[in-house]
Length: 163
Image (cartoon, rainbow, N blue to C red; front, side):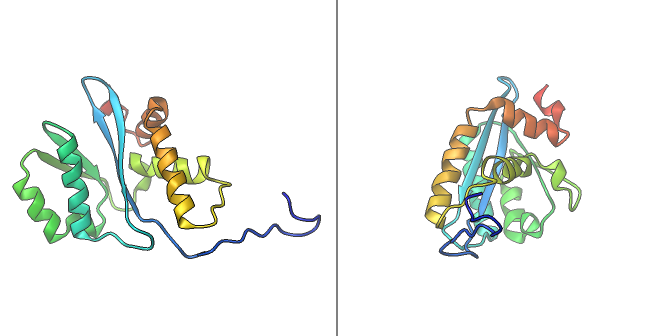
């Protein structure tokens, strides 16, 4: 470290409790065996609600043609009344749920872990603007790393989705 010998390094940040809320998905195009990472960030310190999750799913639907199978966890926001209404009127979506409390089965959670504990493990931004820019840069690069995205899918036990 760069701290004086015998001292702990101190990293100063402007907002130690600041956060960037993110939502994401890995899209698999079976005929081409191509993987894409789709994501959306909220403004600083904002939280997702049912409306924003529906908006993201609708955005994903606008980018992908044909039948879509959505596999997600069973957090309450995914089962909200607004989401149920959206799913009822969107016939090309099939929803499958992971068991409760099983992030190890969710490939997008593998992506977030890869970024947080791998690529950004020692990254210390001074503010959320810098963090957001770095996240976008990392996700843009990740979009071109098919082997890493495939590893996230395989690591979640969904290798059949790549076959």
